[in-house]
Length: 364
Image (cartoon, rainbow, N blue to C red; front, side, top):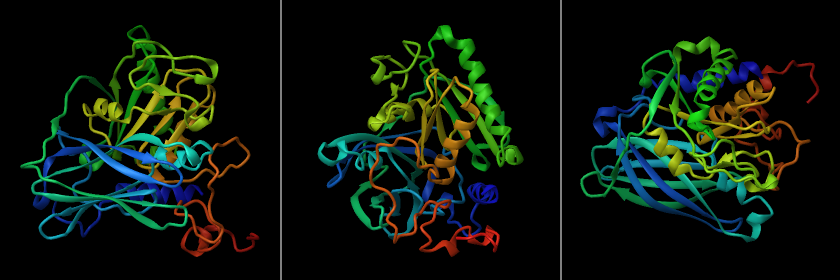
């Protein structure tokens, strides 16, 4: 499995040789689209709220189409005149987990989401397509963004940035951004120590340590009104920078952020490809969603394990391999469909995955 993870990680870092010309379609800044993902088990909709733009485009300039469709959602941008696909991103989301819970059968949920792309020179068509567990697509939204006519808001720069490790320029590296939540200004010393500690956890683990020159790790210096994290099951409510909370989708240890627009607005101040929320709490918890974000609590003997585990979800689209822990989701993998997650198999198409890495004497 280690070889599989290394292969997936290297794939994320290598640029495509036949990529389209960035300068033909884009200028060097970022467009962020904030929208709501609304529905339940039976219905689903997208509602675009605001466009934001600013900074620079810190992602690759050469690898602009998603190399894998590991996520539950596929975002695509097309040149409105020629119909040419110029950017795509596959990702997963909290909404698709919510709709598989008991609550999601009957109650309508509304979840904030954001997508980032290079800022287009000309009018583009944007398309959102979702996939169910049977890998069947449903196009949920089609619209347009015209940089000359569509209103958008400029990025607001409010936060200082801490450089924890810089291996290369943002366009040639994986940029990891930590955002602290639940740290007050009185916790400043602890916050800075934790940011460095978690950076070291990543860089001391394979395959990250072998690729340190292709990785940048930074942290937002952001503070909360109150110290600690909201924990509904223990009747604890905190006002924090991102309002992260335990017991998301009715799972006690599931520590996630429901203020995703605020999370991305805070992150506007720094180059980033992925966001890691470090929550100031001694209670075990965390979560990771492919190409979305991940969380980890700062205290506890398993923090070094949890951060790398959640990065497996966030970076490589890996699925959980345990089944004994309590979960709130009920919609698991159909036995007659091969999961998109690269580390899992139902044996429907095991040949396309890591079967060649298994010793021939191993029973399957």
